[in-house]
Length: 397
Image (cartoon, rainbow, N blue to C red; front, side):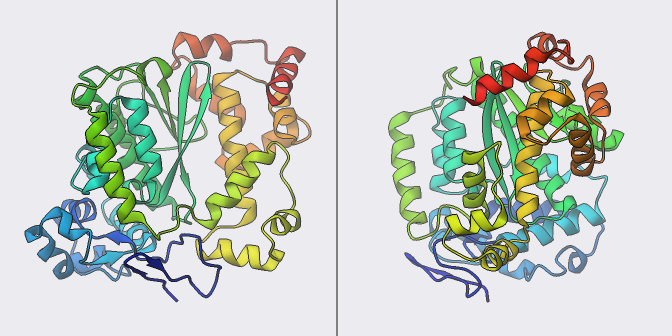
């Protein structure tokens, strides 16, 4: 049963305890961002009933929003959930696989017209401030994917994590849009080239790679085993000309009022956070369920509400770390296996292939010659050196 948000109260689904956001909760305003995506898709020759099939969305529901003041939209109007957005994204990717819809949508997505959420982004004082607001209001600004951050060798690494059971097609479309949006808004706000950034995308065809290089820069590269962004730490604190801490704080206060009563995290996010705190050890399903005070069957049922499985959550975390250790620290298969507690190099190779359908050697080869000197220096290290394993062990302490 789909839960609903009414004013400041949150009614939980019968399939899980209250206090967690799910893909069934109708909290997203079907306003400008989603209407823009649909508008771009409807400009094609594909009939609208095909694009909207299974979404529960009707064009007639969105039309009145064009005549409503932006602030008013956040106190009424049509609401939808992440599952509906995921179906829409999947339909668009299915019927329009060669179109630039994701990139074109992303290029105009932020700051956008999402009321106080957009104001918080628009008034960010620098990129670091922008990313903080983006994460704080991720369920409104990057619905379907959760931005996850880490630091590696002078770079802020940003993974767009699927924690709502999106289909591969929907995940790829939304990730391309959000990556494009971040590069686009940074170029506009900082008036600087983002050539030092690197956008890594997973397996893709030549047309998608060319498109991403147009929108995200020539450093965009594919085939490294996953999709994520590497942003130099030096650009995070560079002042943005239009930023205003005072107006940003006002926008944040208004945004917090709008989000009052809506859970800040999904259950999958909470499980991911728990595993991140125990990493590289990954507790058993039973131990994790005990940590949340529920049975193993209940934990699986809560995750299933969002189309997720426990093994999938653990594997996503392992893959994120393995990509960073491989491409940013240049560790060998044996050292990565040691860091992730996967046994030996052979076990890691099998796991990596299961996660990505690639061998680690193929992922390294795909990025050969595409990395900046700072990263390449680490990646060219002696992979067989026992110092690599010792280094990662010291970082865990």
